Image 1 (tube, rainbow, N blue to C red):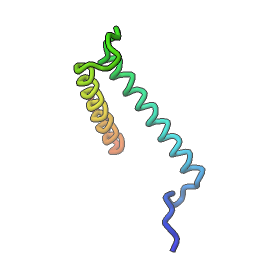
Image 2: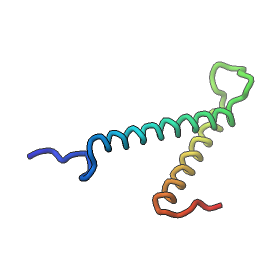
Image 3: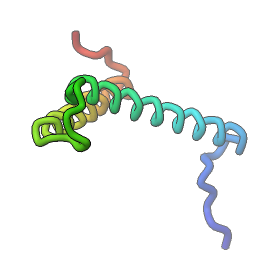
Image 4: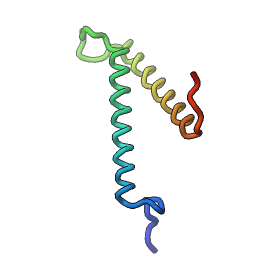
Length: 86
């Protein structure tokens, strides 16, 4: 008995690869935006220490959490076909 194909019916391997590549590019872009946004918001511009202090760590934790929460909400709205609230 053959194992089921991970590629949905009606989609070629090339299409599946292209979709996976697009998804990976999206995730890399999302991570880079997240890192840049939270770094600018939370890390002091004058590097006094070689590690993040307690305040910076807390700020980054909150920033990342909020970023993922909002990203999830927007994703749900888009998949439901609803416009985001203003």
